[in-house]
Structures are given as C-alpha cells and as structure tokens.
Amino acid sequence: MIVLAGLSAAGFAFTENIIYYARAIVYSSENIGVGDADAAVNQIVWLRGFWTCFGHPLFTMMTGIGVAVALRTRSKVVRVLAPVIGYGAAALLHMIFNSQASLNDQNGQMFVYAFVALPMVLSAVIYVVRQVFKQGRVLALRLDDYVRLGWLPASDPMVFAKLRTRLWALLVAITRGWRTFTATLHLQRTLTELAYLRDGQIRGVYDEAGNVRARELVETAQSLRGIAIADPRGLRLNLPRIRRPRAVGYVPPAYPGPSGIGGNWPARPGAAPLGSPGYSAVDPKWGPPPG
Image (cartoon, rainbow, N blue to C red; front, side, top):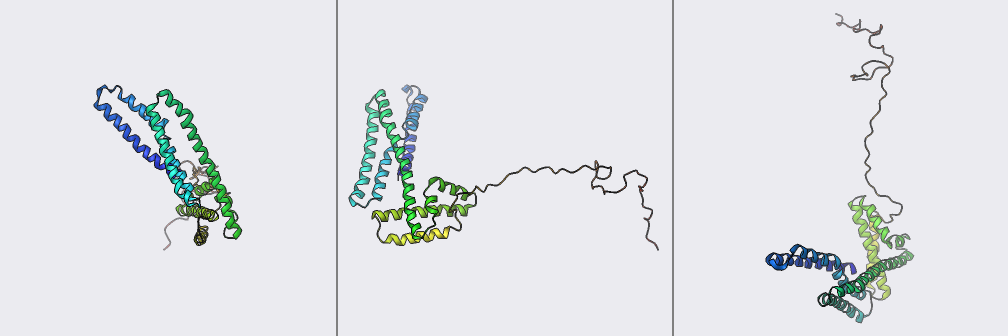
C-alpha cells in the first residue's frame, strides 16, 4: 500500500511539475520584464523536481499506511477511521508544506526543510525498510504453519520469506525461458497470498471461507512446481557462453609435395619425393585398353 500510494503521488507530481514548468516558460515569453527566463525555469525545476521531489509521495504514504492498517485489523471502527486519519494526515502535511512555502522567508524555509522535512523522509524510509523485514518474518511464520500440516515443503518458508531469494529465483527463471519465469512469478504470488490469508485467519479477519481459498492456493502452487523455480539456492544463471573460435593448427609437412605451399591435398606418407629417381611422370602401365 505504501508503494502504490507513493507511485500514484509521484505520477501526480510529475504532471503538476510539467504544468508549472510550462506556465513559467509561457509567462516569461509573453512578458519581457520578468528578467532572465532561463534562470527562473531552472530555479523552479531544481526546487520542485529535485529538492522537494519527495513531498507528494511522502504525504500520500500516510493514506497508504491508513488503508494498510484497515485491511489488517478486525475492528470495524479501525477499518473506518484508519483510512480517514491517514488521508487527514496527508492533507495536513500538504497544507503545512504549501503554507510554509508561502509565508516563511528563505531562512525559515531552509529551517523547515532541514529539521522537519528531511527527518520525516528519513523516518519514512526507515519505516518501509522495517516493514520489509517484518513482512518477511510474517511470511516465514505463516508458511511454516502449512509445512507442519504437510501441505508445503519444508524449504518454502526459508525461500519465499526472503526478498533476495525471491529475486534470485526470478533472475534464474528468466534465463530459462518465459514460461519458467511466469510460472515462478505466479508461484511466488500464490504463496504470498497464502501466507497473508493465514495471517488474516489468525487475526480473525477471515471466516471459514478462507480454508477453501487456502486449499485452492496450495493446489495451484503444487501444479506450478514442475515448471517454476521453487528453490533457487545453488542454481546459476543459464546464460549463453560466447567463445571465440580457435584456429586449428596443422603440422607442416616434413617433405615437399602437394601439401606444401599452394598444395590442395595432404601428402601421402611414404610416397617418393618430387624429382627423385623413383618418381615417374607417366606410369608405364597406362595406355589404351587392349583389343
């Protein structure tokens, strides 16, 4: 949810920045008294496209966190209030950001930027990294429940709970063909959904219908194991080897003959050298057939 919120905000920010840049270019081209138009455009590009580029993704992350909390809780009150509070936090941060840019001078803006905005960005990054490791532990624990039931192999919690192992499995799979890659990706998504389904059952979010879905996911995973890369540990990328052809070295002849310089056939070992007494240009036995 945090990633989706950040991507949606980044898309909005890109569009808004293009509008601001185009507005500055058009205004400076129509009004000669604005000064250096290139400097003004460069300034707004650096301000919105670089120094404060994290603003919209940071604000919308609050909404994503609120929706994520609502999806993982059993309380109906929290399900309703968490997205509302997240959206309110996003709107409040955006309002503070716009107000300080309009009301504070340059020194005040730098103070807010250094001691408020950057610490918030660092906190958000730390939170996301912690959630990645936390979700890895959740995947390992919940998949281990199905291992104890005998539904999954014992290696699945160790393989599919680690991000680097899943990425390595995808890299290995893509070097073995598109069919293997799609099957591996489908297998990872299936087991991830299975783990979160089990976690939701423990939290009391899902009812008995979750067992039916869990059995469907396990059967889907079993059908994919013959094609997908289920355990990439110890496997290598199946990359084509590019080798330069080596020149074949022939042993030069030790005697003159057709195999020497300009010759076309190898010399027959044991034959009389060219120009020797035993050499005859014409075989005496050659001639027309008798009769």
